[in-house]
Length: 519
Image (spheres, rainbow, N blue to C red):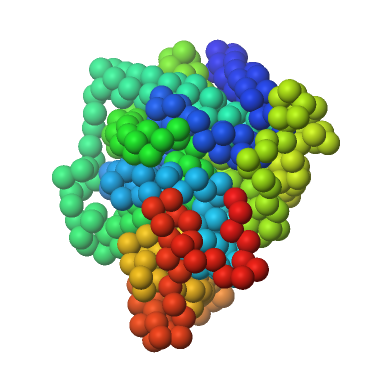
């Protein structure tokens, strides 16, 4: 435990040191803070995209689901996230990077107007409160098991640590710490599967392995949930605010595309081995006379079945992953609230610190531009909301998928249609699609006793109509409602509401009087 504690402390200190060191690059400028000055080179862009996928939800949630329900239940997490990166590289990275957006709802403003921007922002903000919570849950359990704090205190500690360097360095801090996170996670993942294979052998329980495709075709084996997980992550993550901020931050459209492909490959290379190890976890623990109980299966395995040095590396990777996605969630959500809901805009042609020789006078200094100051202030209530959800719903994998499920239902269709059906994609279609999809997903959430096989302890209305057997289907139904609503309303209103045209750089070719188009 001493080795593990020292390793945990070392990675936390390293993350904080890197985050605060690169905070000097912010220079009081919100563009530097939110999208790293749109200058991330390929290694940084790839590392930060991969780290965004390989959060602690996708490691702990992955292993817990695999050990309980089979390979495809857990591997659906890294597979879905990798699918998102590959699809983004193929269809979204270049056009979205070329638009010089600051936040994802900026696209909704340009294409559909101010009201759509606000609605999209609310959907994304709610979803990201759940995503942040899932990572805080993992960190809370980690501190409880390996440091000796209570779960609640662990959640508060990791939230405070992440918030501190996120406030200071923004996306610069996120990107540079992600390089450390991706490196540690890669080494830990490969070392863990090699150790387990050589010391214990890979044991695949009957009906639990990758070859059992019934997990993807048979509802009684969880097929609805497993397929819904892949779809929610593969498509819903495309409209993730912190994910797209990383795409916007790449120094060119080509860099953004390549970074997505590299990040997708890395997500599979690191994530799938955790699923393989989890298949053997129960037999390994049984041979050692250890029971996992209610504790995360991966934590139990690291405590009892591997040498301390290896446990320290893997745990360091988990805590770094928790930091990585938590800081991105805090930054992305706070910037959306300040810029897109609050309507704060700045003149990007005149950086805030330019007149002062690039000197920043602190986190809340008066030389920072207004958007930067308000974004930093909004990070505090966002973090508190994440802490609340983490304590109320302590399920890592479910919170990850639910976050992207919400965005798939409410924001994915208007984004795709705005890019690839631009002539018909008008404001009424976008608004009704977002509202109908989100309302449908909320309807099923409160009426289903489980969400992705986890008990709904947050907001459940008991009823005899929808049972746990229905779990997973709401992902497809809500997305389908969003799509059908969009197409129907677009055709019904095409004569009365002309679609706004965007040029290659994502600028509106015709700007209505009084409609502020500055970025």
